[in-house]
Length: 346
Image (cartoon, rainbow, N blue to C red):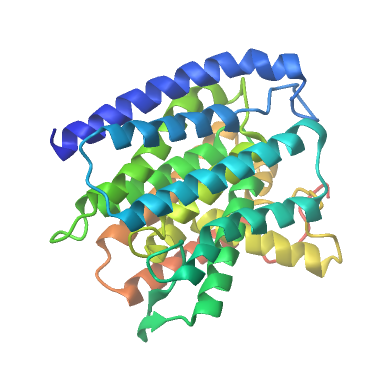
């Protein structure tokens, strides 16, 4: 089988699996009473079928003629293991609720599952050992700093995706865009050394989300829940590192939710409000206050993510990508306002 045939087969099989799993999960969520605690009593168990579809796609990929190095197999196993842990624990949160400090410890724990094996050597674990910095060039991190930075990256991405899951379709759409961009990055780039075996991972995650999204459009029949948002956040963060750090790409395509995370954290701190306490200061809340519909907000955030994701693929230098990040920050400033500024009604 050619690479294109393998990719197409995985895409079709995982989408079909995801659709079937989501469809059968909706009544199960209602029967178990795992539903949203406010507003419509929508099942919040969507993370489980998405995760299962992703794992099924990984299993299928190992049955196809895809040559992988032992270190790559280990890293895929770590992504699956950490993902399984976060889904199982966060399903408990979706069912009965966990305190924010407990959830943060869980996030640090599952991140550590993927990161700490690096202590055994360079061929083990998933860690940001080096990255390309504008004006400086290649930066190599000492092991303690690399482990800390990677755990922070995982935790930040999980929370960024979780915090934008405040309206139907937004979190899976942004993550799908990130998966598409990372697939393109690894399937076609670099031109002289594409990474097909790595490109399979964002392809499978994207396919699982494509199968889920029709059920999550407004008005949603099912939502991701904390299990789902943490799973897709953790997985997309790991994929951005495996096979060579693509942090610039990930930062640009996930820039809005990540900047929103930082913005809201600063805003709550300036108001002396607990960081984990919900309010109406997120990007999507601000846009709703301006009269934007759910569909328009999802289209705007997803479109901005796609635009800057494509820029990350075509911009010729690190400095140009830094400039794009600054433009993205200006976009957030124009839509959210300065940190600490209260949204109406909060």
